[in-house]
Amino acid sequence: MMKKKIIRNRPSQPILHEQLNLKKMTNRKLVRYIEAYDKKTEELVYKEQLPRNINIEQLKSVFYVENNDPEMIYMYDILSEHADYLMQFTKQKIDFKKYDYFLGCYEDS
Image (cartoon, one colour):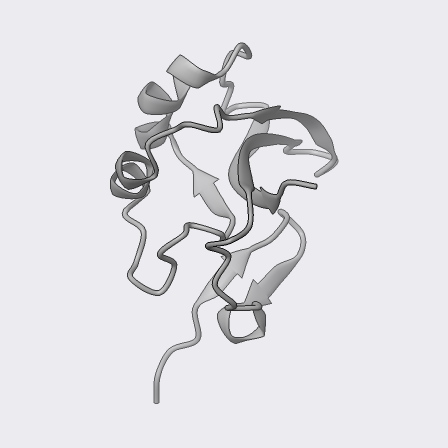
C-alpha cells in the first residue's frame, strides 16, 4: 500500500496530497511568499513576497522538490537548511524559536 503524503497548507490544517488541485498553472502568474506563523497561536505574523523573477529551478533544488510539483505550487516547510538561501530575499530576520515558516505559492490576481 502506498503511503499518503501530507502537505501542510497551514500549521493546523494538513491536507492530503490527493486532495490538491493538480491542474497545470503554466499560463497563470504565480507569486511566492515566505509566511511566518506564531508557534504558540498559529496565527500568521507576516507574509513577504519573493521576487517575481526568482530562479524557480534553483528554488526547487534548495527545497528538493519532487517531480509531481513541477511549478512548485505546494506549500513547503522552511527549515534552517533553507534559511541561508532565503535570507537574501527577506527583510525580516528568520527566528525559528518563535515562528514556523512556510513557502507558499498563490495565483497573482
